[in-house]
Image (cartoon, rainbow over all chains, first blue to last red; front, side, top):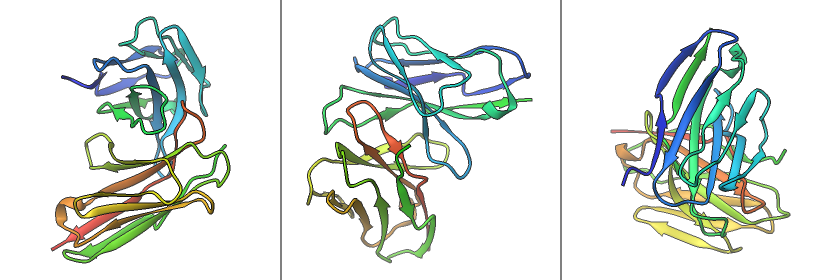
Length: 114
Length: 111
């Protein structure tokens, strides 16, 4: 049971390039989310999904797109990378929205935009 | 934007010491409060999910309490060990679908 898998683990992009961060979970979880971690700040929510075909914006969505075509996958797309998007990105999933449901995190993707 | 604050930012204790940290969150629209343990180079792992005012949870030497009316939760570690060294995150849920994280308390336990 792999849990939440993120790829790649590390990535360097040039300003203006686009790329997709992959996230997959094999736990049949309905809820999936993307966060970014910056020094001195808590994990900030970028986008989230409560099920296949349903996505919504979080706290810091600008410059990112998501889609949820299957329950398992929740890719995060950077449309035109900027240095401000240098960060560590975490994908998380949870079974559903019940109160006692915990989130499971991937190992993170460290992205540097130069 | 919801305000979730954790204190202290960092803590350095000796092996065997007991310690505690605080998470403050909005006292309205409470849905759940999460605690996560985050070791360096790993991903955050859930310690507790707390849902009711007055909740007390325990896992080994680690325990947590919850006061939703005043908007705080305490995490306690009894007899700290070097393997307890990590960042401890709390996260507030006001809805089913969103977690708002604090900045964490970084704990270092030395021999």
